[in-house]
Image (cartoon, rainbow, N blue to C red; front, side, top):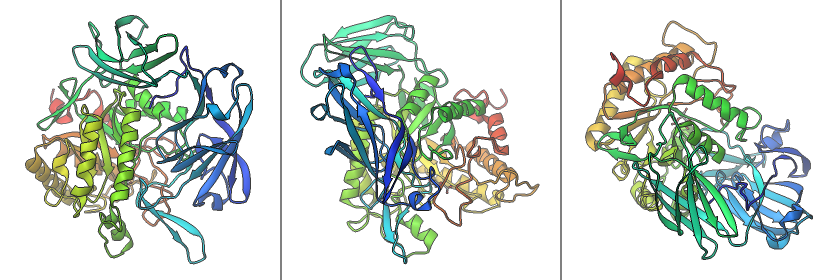
Amino acid sequence: MLKPRSTPTRELVNLDGIWRFTVGEQTLDVAVPASYNDLFTDSAIRDHVGWVRYHRQVRVPRGWADERVVLRVDAATHEGKVYVDDVLVAEHAGGYLPFEADITEHVRAGEEFRLTIGVNNELTDTTIPPGTVITTPDGRRQQQYLHDFYNYAGLARSVWLYSRPAVHIEDITIVTELDGTVHYSVETSEPAPVRVRVLDASGTCVAEADGAHGDLRVEDVILWRPGAGYLYDLEVEIADTDVYVQPFGVRTVEVRGTEFFVNGEPFYFTGFGKHEDTPVRGKGHDPAYLVHDFQLMRWIGANSFRTSHYPYAEEVLEFADRHGIVVIDETAAVGLNLAVASGLMGAPPRPTFSPETFGEATREAHARHLRELVARDKNHPSVVMWCIANEPASNEEGARDYFEPLVELTRKLDPTRPVTYAAVIFATHENDRIADLFDVLCLNRYYGWYVATGDLATARVYLEGDLRGWAEKYGKPIIMSEYGADSMPGQHSVWDIPWTEEYQLSYLEANHRIFDRIDAVVGEHVWNFADFQTAPGIHRVDGNKKGVFTRDRRPKAAAHALRARWAGLDGRKPSSVAGE
Ligand code: GCB
């Protein structure tokens, strides 16, 4: 799905700002984009389960009489329904991906219409991510879920009205090679002559061709590289009707043996699992935090991050494209694991994958989500790998039947990028049932935190045994996709006391000593970039505190240690540059 852009044939009106908001009996002013939960003082709104309505008047620009008019919602978390006046024009399930509707038949150029977007935050066993709505003893509906971040809801990203011609460009796919070959494919709303031009960063045309599909060749190509995100534009034109400009980078990714290659060179990932999470806005996209987070990543020497645990706003990926930050793009399939929940709540274990728990309908929703994710993000050079689930019960019976078709689907949707999943600590090299289906092993491990708490000597032994087991059995690259320890800024100790800043730092160093010894380890993503909000619970102190930065982005002691380790690596493994 193409991102709305202003081009010579398309106009764009951004609908962000103050909208009216109806929840239950109340109607208030609300900010878009923002999750609604933390905007109001009323806890009934924060904890609301079910539908809310966002509404406002919108005027269609007077000059659009001969154009198609499209309404685009970048995200409605977790389900959206769009009405023009009283007519339902679009419905969408899945809270982190965009959807749009051609509303031409329902509006008139120069006139106003009433736009209503219903948003439902309920999670069930057939949504991605899953959850359960229960009724409390006093009769309230309450959302429970299996993931460790707050279930923020609402319109967290932009809403747009745009015009496009009746005969228009529907989709563009670009695949590149290191010699400057650009394979392109253009879909149009009806058969039409297509012309394409490649423009370099200065706007100079460096290649051109006719036809909806084909190959272009850029001479003396400048590659997109980690740390240097050079971008070209593919300008696509349908004669006399539509023009669309799609940025792209020329780069390749490949997995061979136990290595991960970008542009044919071994790449070592340094960085984080992140969240879209800030005070007041919740998951609301904010360009100031975007710029600042990327500044902090550069400052600390992070060359990459994972969009844990859902697809992020497209603006984030565009920024990564421009700044040469490498992205592991993750679906919202987090919590497909009933053992984790029953362990925490002391409930009897139920099988994760079964017709009564997560079955056919869940997998269908997961497959739909994957299709939409790849369609949205396929042209971002920053995206080097798809992560199709976080911590599923990959050690349980049924996991293979559930995942095999999804891995196949991902490869069919995009044959150019490796595929991974992030494995939970209960999934070992001995009992995991799906690892061989994937290209890269992403492991989430908390030795020294949830296991061997406060005992880093034992933690190191466990970690080394665990990693060597995977490395020897599978011979695939391993990324440590999560390792981390909570810390309360201001807590200090000379001993290994959990929750202190020193312990977080020593925990990370203990992990690093082991990574450096195992060749198959090709990356380290600390959990987490910053502290983030979670559901209330005795394991959390106003949220998860495994951030290397606080929620307001101040460095904890560990940030300085990571900076010292990651400085100047330039994609190389720390142990390979030691002693240079
Ligand atoms: C995990 C999850 C992540 C949690 C983290 C933690 O394994 O993938 O979502 O926040 O552990 O801190 O417990």
